Length: 210
Image (cartoon, rainbow, N blue to C red; front, top):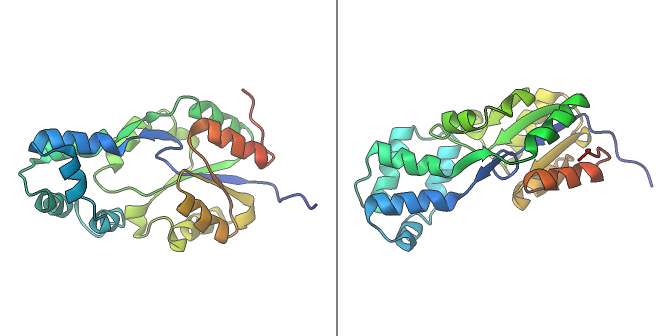
C-alpha cells in the first residue's frame, strides 16, 4: 500500500479542539438575565439562520443583538448580552499547548480556521493568548464572509498555505466540517481536544511524545 504524502501543515478548529467551549453556559446566562426558563430560551433561539449569517459577517454586532432580543422578546442590555455571549468560551484545553509546541518543533506550519463572529473575536483571542503564538495565522469566518463547511472557507486556507490538500492536516470536532475538508483532499480527522489530536497525528505518521 502506498504511503500517504507527508504532512507539511496542520489546520486547527478552535472551539473543542484548542479551547474549551460550552454553549449551554450562554443559554443559562441569558435565562438568568431575562427571567425566562432555559428551555424557553432554547426554543426561542432554535432557528440558527441569523446566527450563521452573523458568523459570515453579514450583521454588525448591534444588529445581531437586536435580532436576538426580538427573538427572546425580553430586554437584554448590551452588558448582559455580551456577558452571556462570551460565557460559552473557555481557556485552552489542558495539554494542547504541548502538542502545538511539538508540532512547531517539527517545523509544521500551524493555522486556525474557526467559525466565529465579531463579538467573540476579542474574547477568544484574550483567552487563547497562551497558545496563539504557535499559529502563523488565524482564519475567521466573519472576516472571510464564509464559514465551514463551505468549500470557500477551506480554499482560503489552502491558497494561503500554497500546499496540495493532501499535505495539509485538518482537525475539527464537527463531522460535517471534516467531511467537507476531506472532499477537497485534505487529511481531515474528527478530533476532540488534545487526546484526539494526538491520536490523529499518530494516524498521519506524526506521533507525539507524552
